[in-house]
Length: 106
Image (cartoon, rainbow, N blue to C red; front, side, top):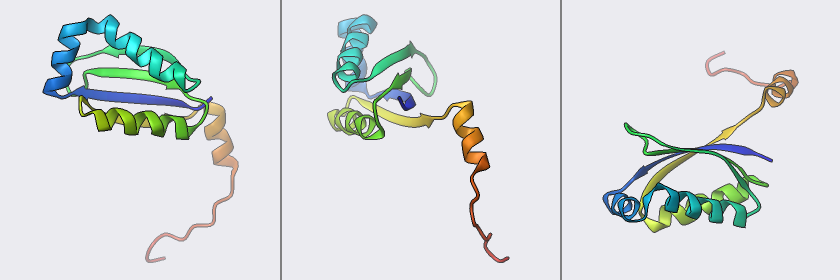
């Protein structure tokens, strides 16, 4: 399954919700959304600094990740970034592929 790194920052309204229901309540909500689309939460951490939450999730396909991303962003309680994560084998395969490319100006 494709794996994604999700980094999120709460808006003021989202922070109020976190304070009201706690971290375990948010984890339950995340689990429900991810498993509802056939995915799995590998790790979820709360942080402080630029990001408030960091997750690693597996989804059956990138479209499932996009569906979650759109729905969460539309809710307005979080600003999120999702980064596809590739295995070492996937990068090795990519490195073996021939790509025809001409740099600008050459």
